[in-house]
Image (cartoon, rainbow, N blue to C red):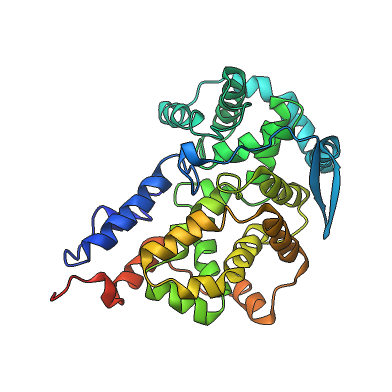
Amino acid sequence: MLSKAISFADNWEGSKISQNFKIVIKDIVTNLKGSLPGSRKHNEVLVLSDDEVMVKLQVGRTVWHVPRELRVELWLSSLHRKGVGSPLVQRYSEFLQKEIKPEAQGDIEKDIQRTYPSTKRFNSEEGQQALRNVLRAYSAYDPKVGYCQGMNFVAGLLLMFMPTEAHAFAGLVILIEERGMGGYYTREMPLLQRHLWLLARLLPSRLARHLESVGVAPVIYSASWLLTAFSADFPVAFSGRIMDVLLADQCEFALLKVATTLVMACEKKLMACKGIEDTVSFLRNQIPTLDETELHVLLNEAFTRPWSAAQLAVLNSTEESESVHESMSRVAEHNPAFWMDGA
């Protein structure tokens, strides 16, 4: 899925590019092409509280500490708004019986073991089968999209709260078809590429220039955030609140708003990072593992503070965006740090 967008890592024409830079980029691409497991190694993932009795529920700009059953009710009401969800729930078994493309089947099987491996739910045969079923059903429902890495974590998050597989399937359909996430998963990933381009322009110009100067484009740290709606890298309590907003369609550009807020909140520390390795490590490892209270405060800010006038101008721009390949090529070719000494 990402081969055309990031083929620079495997087929770089400029052989004088620093080998260290190539190694860093290839490591990133490997993660993107694989399971999108997030910022932590599997044996380092924090235990996710997927069966908490109480949850922080995001309703509009307000956060409520409520029994998890109220989140279930909110998500179900979002499914059945305008009568969209009920037919999907009813037809779930129909799609589950259909054959899917071998490529999609193989990719799903690879990712089942890599999805929330630290949770009891998905470390069990029953939980893995439920996830397999939902992903297979979606692939049969929409063969054009089929399956794309990232969907596994979104489906897993839905399964944590939806009462049945059929409801999780309906939620996945609504997110992709009604909430715009389909552009993340189609072959050329047009929406993902557009949003990565926008993210670089939504940040303060000084911070954006610094990140580019050390070779860090948004694809390196935020592709996983967006593709999984922050569910692969961050605690379930955090990504659950984001899903509250996505399903209820409460905030336009919700995922971009969260990504922008997180990076801007760490501007001072990011400006102090000197090279690509330190910067990428901070973005991919330290931000997702911030204290959970701090993460919730940042999420409060994301969903309450309006975009600035400059940011709104960026979001409303009709300017054609760069592809990921074009962005990374430009960053590398205009940064002397990526060239071998004496080249």
